[in-house]
Length: 434
Image 1 (cartoon, rainbow, N blue to C red):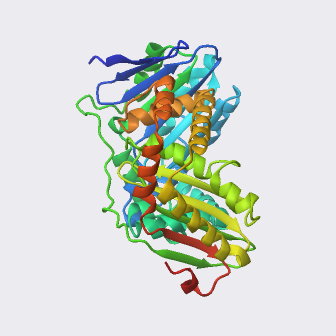
Image 2 (tube, one colour; image 1 turned 90 degrees about the horizontal axis):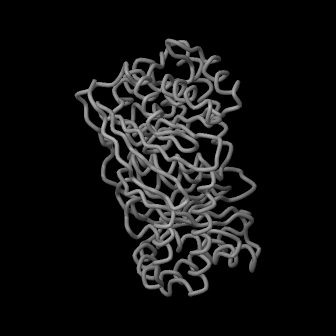
Image 3 (cartoon, rainbow, N blue to C red; image 1 turned 90 degrees about the vertical axis):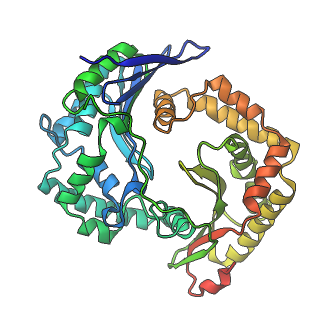
C-alpha cells in the first residue's frame, strides 16, 4: 500500500498539536489535538462552492449539500441522522461561495462513528431522482424564507451590484428559476466531477490521536481514492470582476429600509487583512464603534448598524450595513458617507485602534475555546493554502498593526466610489444616484 506523508505543522504553548497527512491520491487530513476537552469536531471540506458553477448550474453546490444527506449505499436518510443524534452529537453542513463543509461534533469516544458517517455521506451519496424532486421543494422553501428577510437579501443585492453577472455576484442558493430547471443528471455530474478526494480537506479538532484519525479516514475513503491523483487546487470559473460602482435599489413595501454601502476590499491572503480587521472592528464592530456611536447613540437613526469585511481567494469587499426607517434613509446615508470620508482622510484615533485591537484579540482567543472553531481554522488554512499561525502568532500580527497602516488602507479602500444596495419602499431609484 502506498505510504502517506505526515508532518507536524504547529505546537501550541497550551499543549495543542497540529499534524497533517497527505494520503496517496492527494486527500489531506489535518488534526488539532486540544488538551482538556472530551469532544471532537470532524469535518470534510470540499473546495467547491457557488462561484464554481456555470449560470445553468446555479444553486448546484447548495443543492448537493441537501442531497448528500438523503441516503448512501449503506445508510438511509433516517439512519444518517439518527446514528449521530443517538450519541448526542450534531451533524450538519453549509455552503459558501468558495467551499462546502460537512461536519459532526461528538464525544471523543464516538469519533470513529462520526468519521464513518460524514465520509460515507460525502463519498457515496446516491442522488436518486425521487430525492432530487422532494428536495427541490425544500430548497424553494428555503429561498422563499430567505427572500422574506430583506436584511439578508440586501447582501445578495450588494454582491450583484458589486460583482455583476459573475459567479461571485450570484446567490449561493440559486434562484427559483434555476432550481426549478436543473435536472438530476446535471446535479449528479457536478457531484461526480467535483467531489474528488484530491480537492478535499478532512479536518478534526479535540481529544484525538492523529494516526487513529488518519487510519479511519483512509478506510472510509478507500473506495474513491485514486493513488495517481495529486492535490487539486480549487478551479474557479468566474470572469475577472469589474470594479464599477453602481446603485441597486429594490422597491419593496418594507417597514424598514435595509442598505449596504461598500467598496472593493482585500483577498483573504492579503497581508493587510490584520490591519483591516482592526479598522473594521473599530469603525463598526460593536457598541463602542464609531458607526454605532454616530448613527445610533448620538442621532437615534437606526437600530442595527455595523461594518464588515469579506475576503475571497482573489477578491474582497469592505462595507457597512444599516437598517432604518424609510423616512431616515437620506440622513443615514449622509452620516455614513461623512464617516467614511472622515475615516479615509484621518484614519482612526489611537484610542480607537487600541480598542479595535482589544476586540480582535479577545474575539480570536475566545473563539478558539470551541473545537468547532479550531477545526474550521485549520481546515480553512489547509484548503486555501494559507500559513497556519499559532494563536500567539495571530495576536502578535494584530498587536503589530500601526496607525499608519490603518490610515493607508483606509485611504486605499475608501477613496473609491462606493457601491450601494437598498431595499425599501422607493419607486424612484434616482434619489440614490452616486
